[in-house]
Image 1 (cartoon, rainbow, N blue to C red):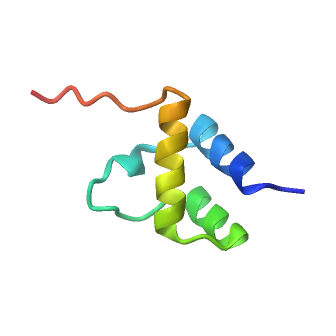
Image 2 (cartoon, rainbow, N blue to C red):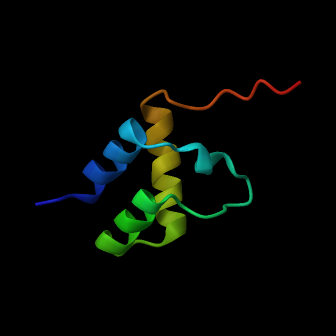
Length: 66
């Protein structure tokens, strides 16, 4: 049986999560949207959980803008 937390982990480990860096909270990726629909979560919930998981996995994007 699929679990929401496993989906979040997989997305961060295997998908492009650059969309999370949009400060305006833009659209989710297709994969993240599918997870939201499949597990009955809002886009905001999925976005927050992906950001938390990305930090946990140490995959945060470094902003090198000066």
